Image 1: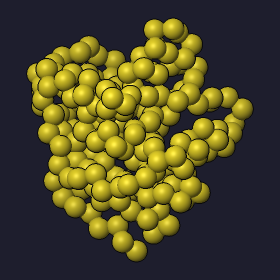
Image 2: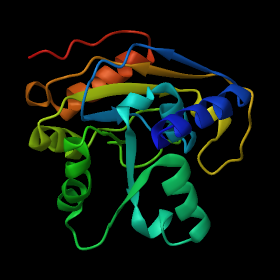
Image 3: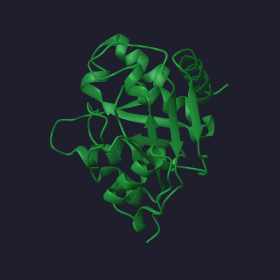
Image 4: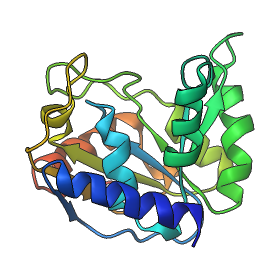
Length: 202
C-alpha cells in the first residue's frame, strides 16, 4: 500500500471520529495539479488528505523552520501528512517554491497551496496571492479551486480541538491557469463554499 493511500485512510478515520466529513465534487485530474484552498484551521490539511483520492498523491509545501526544527513535528509532517520543506529566508520565496515543488508536479503529484498566506480568524477569505497560479503556469499543470468548511469549529486558530462538528470539502473543476486570475480563483472558492459553481473560462 502506498504512502498516499495510508495517509488517505488514516485521515478519513480521524475525520469520521471528529465530526464527519462530506465531499462534494469529483477529482478530475490525472497527473500533476495545483490546488488552491481557503485556510481557517490546521485541520484543513487533514480533511484535504481525507477528501482527495490517493491517486492525487497530495503534497503540502510548508515552512521548514516551523515543521522541521522539532523532531516530533518533522515526523508528523513527513510521515503522516506529506509535507515538503520550504525555506522562508532570503527573499526568494517563489524560486524556492518552484525549486521544491516543480519536480513533484512533473512526477504527477498534487501540490496544495493556501494562497491567503495564513489561517483566517473571522471566517472570511482574504485576497489570494499569485504564487500558486504562477506555479501552475510555469509547470504546465491545471489549477483546482477547493473550498473547506467546518474545520475552524473543530480546531480553531489559537484554540483547542473540539470534535463533533461536521466538515465539508467542495472540489471544483480543473482550470487552465493561463485562462484565469488569482481574484477569479478566490471567487470560485467562495462560490463553492456557498454551494454554487463559478465559471472560470476566459
